[in-house]
Amino acid sequence: MAATIITTEDLHEFKHELLEEFKEIVQNSSGIQPKKWLKSPEIRELLSISPGTLQNLRINGTLPYTKVGGIIYYDYDEIIKVMEQNRIHNKY
Image (cartoon, rainbow, N blue to C red; front, side):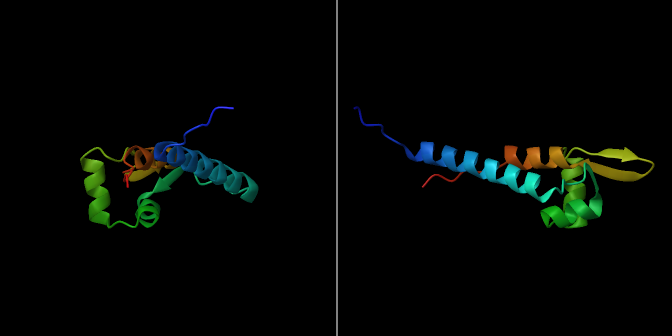
C-alpha cells in the first residue's frame, strides 16, 4: 500500500470544507434563515463598521446594493460572497 502525503494546503482546504458543512448544518438545524435583504444599520452591525465606512464601500463598488424609495438594501448572500472573495489566507 502506497503512502499518501498530505500537505498544509490539503489541510487548509479540508478545514474550509468542514467549516462550510458545519455552517450549513447549524443554519438548517436552527430553522432560522437570515433575511434576504438587510438595511444599512443591520449591515453595519453585521460587519461592525461605521456609517462612513459603509458609505465608502458602496461608493467604491465593494458592496453591491439596491435602492428603493430612498432606502438602501443589501442582499445577505451577496455580502457573504464579497466577504469570502476578499478573504486573506495567511500561509505559515
